[in-house]
Length: 160
Ligand code: THU
Image (cartoon, helix red, strand yellow):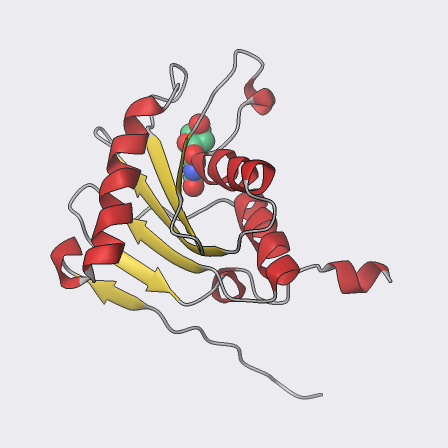
């Protein structure tokens, strides 16, 4: 028997102004994307912005449904739109923002399904997807890849 340990590194920025201009731009777009959220059931408004390798920006926001499981998170709305419209471009960075007016002020943390989906594209492009997570106080957490947020992920390799 051998006890093993896995740890992850991430960076916390107290204010979004500490990031590069390029990153501030997609964070600002993620804030505006949250305005497109359709969240009458949770009233939790999430915005996502993706920068592709050709510098195209794709926005997404959560879209809810009276049949609850039919709704989709902002991250998946954005990354599916990116892949559908630009299948040959790589995803460089995804920025996610939660307006979270009534609740706690924690930095938004993508759900397991979104992590799995982002992981699929990271493996497809064989290049890290940077993740920026921001709360309404503009505190930002930066992860260098999705592997940090979803270690030991289930991959296509496992099916071969
Ligand atoms: N939501 C997102 O869009 N992204 C996340 O990372 C977490 C949760 C959405 C799904 C649902 O519309 C609402 O927030 C409450 O869970």
